[in-house]
Image 1 (cartoon, rainbow, N blue to C red):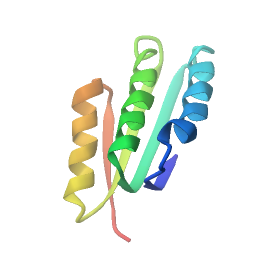
Image 2 (tube, rainbow, N blue to C red):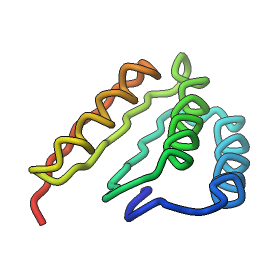
Image 3 (spheres, rainbow, N blue to C red):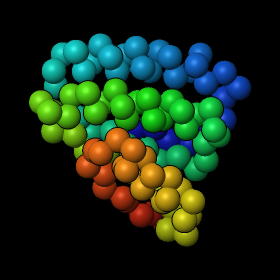
Image 4 (cartoon, rainbow, N blue to C red):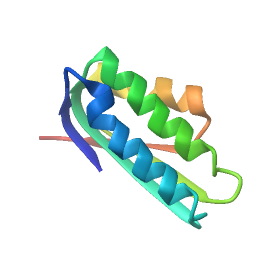
Amino acid sequence: MFSGTSITENSEEFYGPVLNWLDDFINMKPKSIEVNFKLDYFNTSSSKYILEILRTIQRVSATSKIVVKWHYLIDDDDMKEAGEDYQIMVKLPFEMVEYDD
């Protein structure tokens, strides 16, 4: 699960190992993948890497059952829209999960 606030100054340094691990994982041809995002806020630099994570997962969508759960606070329309935008960009099945603090 990716959760919290992502405003790293060097997003490549932070997300690079995550993407490397993810590459290794999808090369094992998993039967299913569930990834959860529960972010309070992310900056533009982080958004690039979130998209890259989703595109990496998308590479195995023909052979793996994939579910992306996008969690957002009940009144956070911006975060909900961000999840909807990612869903359009990567064509993966998203579950929009509303929660209340």
